[in-house]
Amino acid sequence: SDVCSSDLLFHLIVLNSALKYASVFLLSTVKFLGGPLAGASMGLHFWTTLALTVGGMMTSVFIFSGVGRAWMQHRQKQRRLRREPIFTKRSRNIIKVFRKFGMGGIAFLTPILLSPIGGTVIATLLGVPQPRIMLHMLWSALFWGVALTYASIHFGHMLKH
Image (cartoon, rainbow, N blue to C red):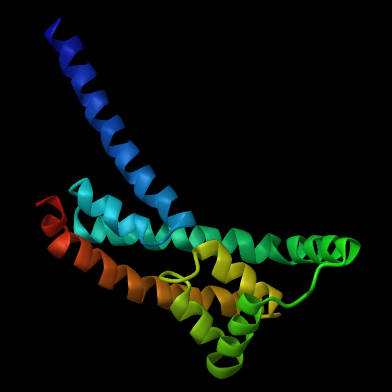
């Protein structure tokens, strides 16, 4: 009976850890800031939170830079059929940033203003090759991952009071 209950306890601890890791990773695939905040709130270590956050973002970047071109063609076809305007105020601002700062500017803004999916789709729509998107999004994810994970862990306690 003692062996059975210690086995169950072990499995519950492993499952709890796996759920923590999965939630940080999955949250980072859609909303980058969510990863560091979730990791800090669950008491995960800095390096674990950083790795899961960067890994989550880069998974989104990889998937959406790959399927992004097909999706882009589908959306353009839909817009033409509905006779929607191609440019909106937001799309004009994004193009201004891209013209002024290039892929680096889009990558820099992706984790904090856009989202891993949004920034990747924008880069794809602007015709940036997938390897270049991956490289720029990686340095951005590492930069913002370190900054936001550090801030979440070291200043997150202030939010609890």
